[in-house]
Image 1: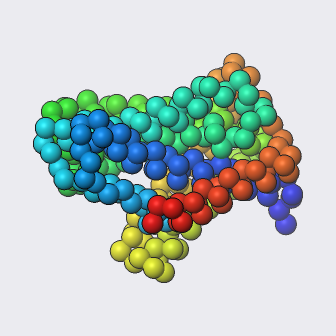
Image 2 (image 1 turned 120 degrees about the horizontal axis):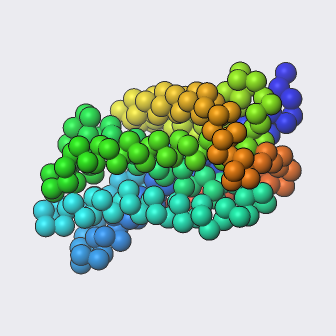
Image 3 (image 1 turned 180 degrees about the vertical axis):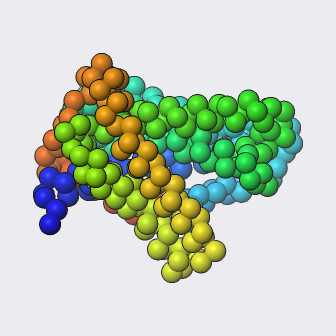
Length: 262
């Protein structure tokens, strides 16, 4: 039987990850919107759905396409890490979901762009950015750096969810993995039931999230001992009030996404 502390850690991480993942994808789309408006393009449609995925539909203008496509990832990374830097000093007391926006944005944008480049996905942001003149090799290196930096920061933040160096490897990974996979599993199950064509995306995300969980669990001790200690990122045992706020914020975000953007 799982101890109460472990259940709380899983729910805390799951709630924070759900919030950061969905908000990050929404911020990405609004980055595109800001760029479109800046170039005077007003004919577009934004689709945001917490389970099916987000998309912006607009009439492609070759003159602006590279800027508009780059604006989504850049805005997500900027907003997420501004919040991370602004609230880092309050990390012991603030709702940890806010701090997770930074590393999740880095991982999202780095990974998504790498996949788009490797698979040469038509009409994807990265493929069109390359077509606009950015060298593919340069973009690939940047994506890899963003991804690695996101994983590193994510690992450093894990003590804020009660995950400790004293925990065994199995104990850590069985806390981190369900925390990362919970929301992604819901995406997969929703698509399996209502949008079968999107189920493959959900399955890929589950595998990717499981791989990230295994990776951060494996590097946790050396990263936290060498970097986390210098940043004074100590283990924090959150009370039920913070847990309720994190879970409530995640639920509220998903509900708002379903009601107002569809």
